[in-house]
Length: 197
Image 1 (cartoon, rainbow, N blue to C red):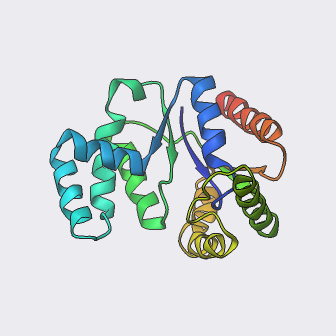
Image 2 (image 1 turned 90 degrees about the vertical axis):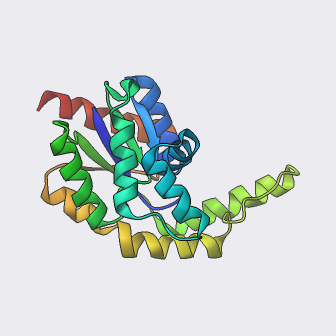
């Protein structure tokens, strides 16, 4: 089973991806983690990525797709994977589709976590407040202004994927404002329905 979770920053994609991965013996693939691993392993694509990152540039879609291609060939991905943080754009979604087709794999589902932006901002502010009160360190991007900037980038670049995957009949939406357990139950229902079709 190969999945993508979509939703704005703070929607809970990472939390849900971990739960799904554990429950279904899938591998959660984060593009950032894969890039770092490829650089560390010194693969050909890892060396290309390292050169770009050292120069301060953004790693190209071709390099990211190459790293995903190498990673999904690993034995632990045989049962399937959840893509976390990819694709972010329509061009990346097209490239992923071509890659999976070349490998004889398919995308089983794209699950959108629908959330209310205003509530997301209050969640982030509350989390930052609680972290400070507990004597912890707040992440640099864990504030309302940073979240608003990230939301704008999401709606500009990533939100069009909702329509894209809807057109391919891969998209299912769940209420991301529900509790973690309820969101998980909705996702499980989507996955169970997908297995029957």
